Length: 383
Image 1: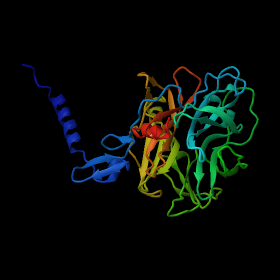
Image 2 (image 1 turned 180 degrees about the vertical axis):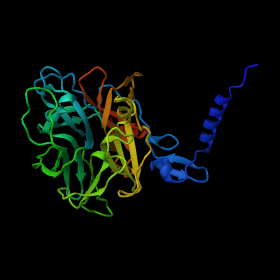
Image 3 (image 1 turned 180 degrees about the horizontal axis):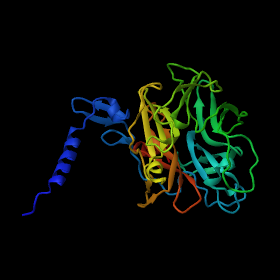
């Protein structure tokens, strides 16, 4: 007869009791990504989210070479004739007049430089896809030259214009692909069409990583706009060209190398009016000086100026599964953006990231489908 392992039994009992005891009390326990049902105490997750607390994106296998990957392009028509062209994230825009055409607005590095030379070699380019939001996308045009980075484009219904937020200023590039010190500053440009012409950039704030969200709704056709920036500070303006006033700061996210350390925020308001931020969570850098695997962070709040929750659990990681049965563990997976359904429910359909593989200086833009909504969306598009 084997002796009882009392410590192991106690551990198993405690874990079992915690699983049984867990239950939601409010929608906050469902990460504001679902509804808490009583008396069952179970979360009903919105499409695109999973786990008992609806705290993880329901990512599906991606297709190889979808997104925007020009790391093996060396044609003189593009930027590099020797080492390929690296990019770093972007956001998807469906053409307003041709619903079968999708644009990807991307940070791409000039002269064949990689991510290590992002400042001041970053440019803003537009790529196109006729095969759905996941791509693959093909280079179309440069929209802004060096140095412009952190691009985020939104449509403003109040202004009937696209708004392009970036950091940087116009400058010539040096001869060496390396990063140079540069002051952070956010600017905005506007255009009636995604192809341009784009108005000259107007400087707004001394900050970085802009993430705008127009407050316009059918019930409130306002020109007001919300702007999130690095460290999840949140600004408000009556118009897109400012001035912007700080309305919320996160007291627990003001220092590097803490368990709340983040960058690259992506801000949105869901169908119930709750607010969310998806971000690059740098917990592994803080703990182990590594850039992987816990990289996706999620913050949520019922109001912009209310109490925000950060559960300190990964909403996605650096491992990506592909439709060919393989998988890739990335060295870096950052700059998260979501593409939502256009039916009013704001269902997340695709996750966009800048990625870099191990033992590679090249980087590219990866697009991964979310839940069953992405495939349904593609079928309805006929792609």
